[in-house]
Image (tube, rainbow, N blue to C red):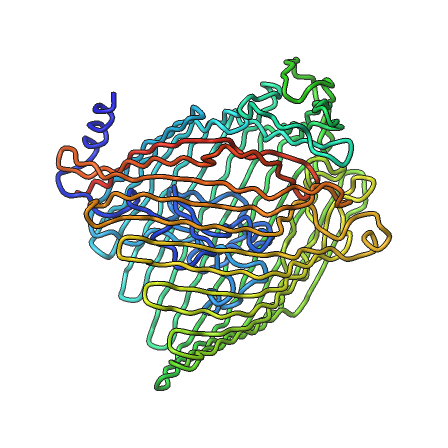
Length: 639
């Protein structure tokens, strides 16, 4: 069987040697810092697009494609995305209009030198399996190229869920003239038979007993979801002398056709609770967005000046409805009790529209050997219109001035210090499943960030240490279960990064963040809630190393150690979840078959099978995945 799989992969290509493409993606060796980089099958670092300094850039609306603004509703598919990088601190100093929560920047494939087909087979000890086919192809030399692929997943989950997923995407790069390119793209993903992760709410200040058989799904077989998402857009860039123009227009749509969520309520210390299924009507989240930016660069000896004028806009339409809940039975959360699906009655859905236009000007200056400056000012007009059935319409407007200022100073050879201030208007996460106003999205929030730090380079290593202070309005459930603003949240912390080549045969990515999250407001003052936000970890440490001696001819060993700091599981701060350490080990081995290179990848995550409860922002508990071994076989076939 093993040989038949290898031969099947080899037979998919043309004559020729394999080029280094997706099969060789290695986040630990490619990362420029420890703040977060992701590829289709690899990721490493402290942060990702869902969690930066305790906040989510995706929820905040701080997503970029090739540096241009997109109001993302559906996930961008890695069939067309090469990588995503988190931009914070000094890594954002060359970015016009940075954002307080950080930026998640997605990069599309570059033009390849030759046709490359990259098949990949994946399987794991949870019973999951998938197959991916990606293509990179020049169509007319450097003038026109294409990239895309398809993938199918039987994505068995750590909690016993069994979703099925299909994804596809296609993009082109057209260069009709020097210094001009047009990049249209499309991607889509559909999932079905997808169980929601069970969430547990306890009846007191404690956590349930551990679920030792973590892979036993105890919910109902009919409590599944079906959803689809798509992203389409076009990016155009051109440069004429000192002037350049960049523009992007995007359409992002996410639709949930079947929506079922399992919550275990009133769980006692023995692990006995009420299985409750929330069913919601079909919902749809769609947005048309984009940005046009005109820039001019002036060179003055060792000084480079860049001026930008930008216009961003989005037209977002959401429609969602209140959930109908049914209590099924009270029993041990480790057991299953199948019941027939009841009939659910759905109320009329709520339309929710947002329109926003933002105009800004910015300046970037770089003086070689001295430092740099990034400043910008924006004026935004924001309007949110909610039309709840049977209630008065709600209209929220805001027209704030936003600005950013960041400066760096080259204090010595390879050493830079920086400081910055950014004020933004950002989105908040929607109301959770157990809220009486489930799925409701608060109006955009005025946020701000102050940060400073030092970055240094020595040999093949890059290091950075910084401090930050981020402040936002704090939304959570009140005593009646209504999701609303309760005060202000502040995340103050220290973060560090070390990355690069320790020796010629070893790469390291090491990062740490120490966070002091606090909530202030009337509910804290009167003792209704604690001063610590629910579910926010106080620290995180990640150390990843990849060892690849030259004599191993492309093979390597890797290890990653992650320590998640403690957090509070309830708003009263009575339940503290301890820190936990997890270890992952892996290996890559390059095989030679039919004159082609294949890369076999084996990785074991949560090596010591550690168990930890994880608290969401609403106080619901989930648990981490147990020990898992994944195996993949990939190649890049060049024609």
